[in-house]
Image 1 (cartoon, rainbow, N blue to C red):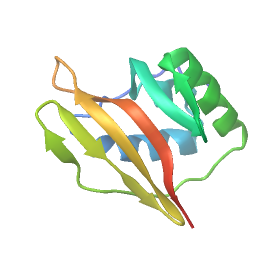
Image 2 (cartoon, one colour):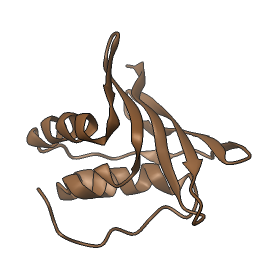
Image 3 (cartoon, rainbow, N blue to C red):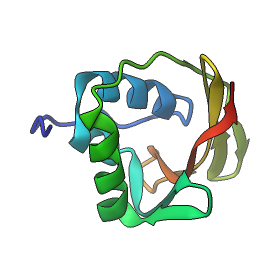
Image 4 (spheres, one colour):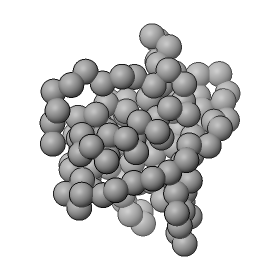
Length: 119
């Protein structure tokens, strides 16, 4: 679903996971896609990657079609300059992402592995 809303950017890399959970629960596809850089990559399965926001949008639309109800806890990010390793723990697993600080000080994901641990 597209909300047409202006989406609050992540001011800290840890906010990305919280915003993802919130926007997914709201069914906000545009808001989810807004968390990624234009050239981002998302793992979508063993050996499969969605490259760029168009491919990520398609994958996230499929995800939202299942009307997920998410809960998770963002973990402290590991920062190195303008890069940060982010993670969100959820029941049965965790995510791992690389975020990059943008020129305006906000953060966006550039690499997303939505499931690194399966329970």
